[in-house]
Image (cartoon, rainbow, N blue to C red; front, side, top):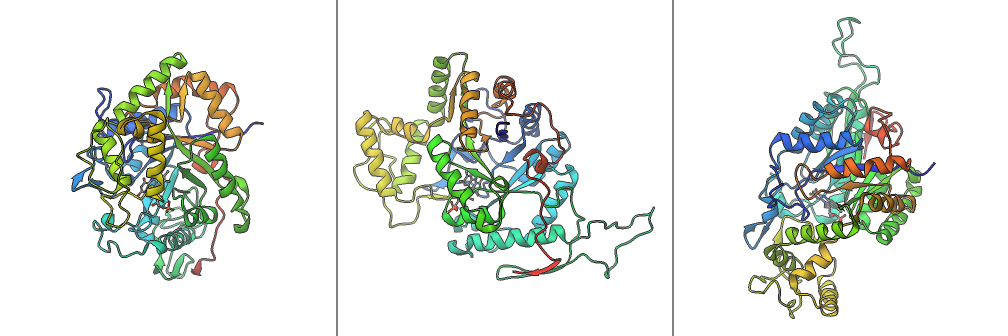
Length: 452
Ligand SMILES: Cc1cc2nc3c(=O)[nH]c(=O)nc-3n(C[C@H](O)[C@H](O)[C@H](O)COP(=O)(O)O)c2cc1C
């Protein structure tokens, strides 16, 4: 039996993929947009729907990043509303572990898991930049080196909360005459460096016990955190070679946490462009890349690497000859740094631009605008399957560029081909997201009262 492919639908926004200026681009706020994408994903028997998170609008040189103007309503509220209009689709929310509290988030996710019949998932992110933190009471308090310490303790405390009710607890049940009293089990205590909380949790065990945990950090600390605590990773390694390397690295970390390779799914974010012929798909892909990287956006992205005001540069002209400024405060705020060594990256970009004769905008399109799968439905299905069967991924989070119709064609044209290849389900066989992902039942982590 070939490996089965996991598929998820990323709602556009909070990235550089979204094209909001296209005539076919709809609202990022109207509930109808969320419903359309979620129902399309469910029609395509996807595993889950996915929301990214941006807790502060990105700014560059004091101006709001145009890709964030579209807005981003509250994740948990949107997912709860979607629970009512879908039946099987998993509902995954990116929710920061740096600015939230375990008790509150555990309640919200357990509630979503109850309301949806076991379909909740939490993508744990850690962004600790003080800029985003300014929106929060304790903004910027957390040292970067402590982000994953806090995240690990956060997840551990949350799991203890989720488990703190006895499995057979019934509260105020008239038929049985049973009520929970203070003497019943269900007390909770977590005493660690980051959190010191105790009491009774207010939500009974939810259908999955532990909503699915995703993780989306790429540093060695992030990978280790995922290997210890996550059920799946949302990765950015969407090429075959990079995907295989990441897959090997992360799966090899599982053993020391007493886990099996199948306990952690690797799901890169990818883009797809379809056409009736390969040439048509390539042409569409070219058009989309130019929409995504307008002259202004190209300069904006160049500034993010150079960390300098480059507004005077011609977007069609050559790259700056001066090196990136690595000494000062970041020019772009509200976004995790994407470049470990800006000076080295700038050199690579200059070399590439010279070799291929590219100006700034075309260079940015070359390095940042690569679509993952471009071709006919048959070609795309073939390549996606090859990726998964050759262990570059366990599946994909599809990131459409248009809201809300960006996955319509994929669901109509590619999903049936994956089904023909017997690498994708033809109906939902389970009801919970854990079941869809083949994760098995959650393993309790704690005695009821535990300390970090
Ligand atoms: C594919 C991917 C998607 C991410 N999505 C989000 C997001 O939606 N919101 C957010 O605040 N951070 C997001 N992050 C940032 C991570 O949470 C993390 O803060 C960042 O990668 C820095 O951590 P690291 O040093 O472990 O990579 C994402 C990261 C990756 C790799």
